[in-house]
Amino acid sequence: MVPPGTTCPNCGAAVPTDAFLCPACHEPVGEDVWEASPPGEAATEPPFPRPAPVPGSVPTSASAEPPVRPRTVPARRPAPANPFSQDFARRLGRLNQWAESVEALGVSIPRLPAWAEEAAREATNPEPWAEVVRGVERIAQRRIITAFEEWAKSTKGRLTRLEAYSVDSRLERDQIEDALHTARTGDIAQALATYRQVDRVVSIKERHLDQAREELERVVALLKDMQALSIEPPQDPAETADELEAELRAGKLAALKQEIRALRLSAVGKLKSTLPRYITEYGDYLVEERTHGIATELEAIDLARGARDFFRGHPEEGLRRLRALQEMHGLPPGRSSRPTGRPAR
Image 1 (cartoon, rainbow, N blue to C red):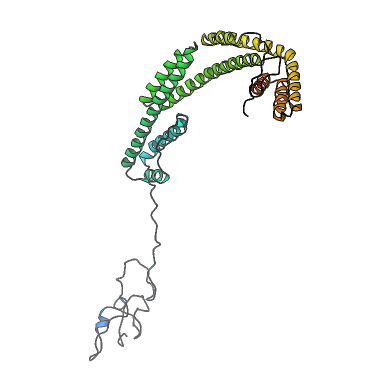
Image 2 (cartoon, rainbow, N blue to C red):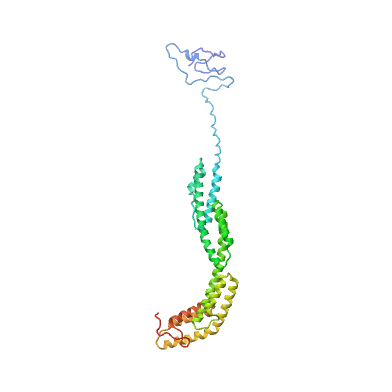
């Protein structure tokens, strides 16, 4: 409280006893007011500290609080770009491409697990991860080169077989060496492209040769079956096999196929005129044996199946059945001498 009769030190106006500010100029009373306590009473501190007046400021009431400044959140700076990310993505894509392309070679190459890929992309120090990726690439390249060497060895063996039948393969041999060279120098993509081209061409040449070989063997087997059934073939099977084999090894595939086609037509034409009589005779022979108490049901079924295959346009299969029946049961009397004993079944 202010003692009675106190005046404002600033403007000289009377200050009430219960006021802390001058009612005229609104300035705080002087510091001496707090020191002028009545005798016998202890000096008291003000209920709150009074800030020093700022020149030019607008006076406020004693109960007013200082304004609170709003807090500002500093803007987040963008994370610096990882210089390894772009190179890592390129190397990883190349590894994935290698893994998909070398499956035909029968080789598997190492690949980074998903957690390692994520850690490498987010790493602040990418150099250790870069070394890991380079190591994986080296291992993959060594495995691919080994697979290429094994492929070259096996493919050269295939070319040797083709060359035995006068199939030119000089270009394919040069391309094999090119594929090995490019793989060893690190150009795996180009090596794989050459590998696919060589493998495709060699497979086509092998397919043509195998088809010619199969047709040759089928027509020779047809002539031999005719001879075994006592049906005179249009040409001798042994001599025909030697002649066709010589043409095959000379690489005359087109002429060989034409000759095989003509020979087969001649054999089938002769069979159409002679085979029905043979089937009839053999059927009568089975019926005669059955009248003597010999079971011939299975032989009759084989005879019917052989005749069906022939007349449905499969002469090789039909004659093969009839020849097997003849070897198990023998030929009818008059076509050849019957064996003394019946083979065990």
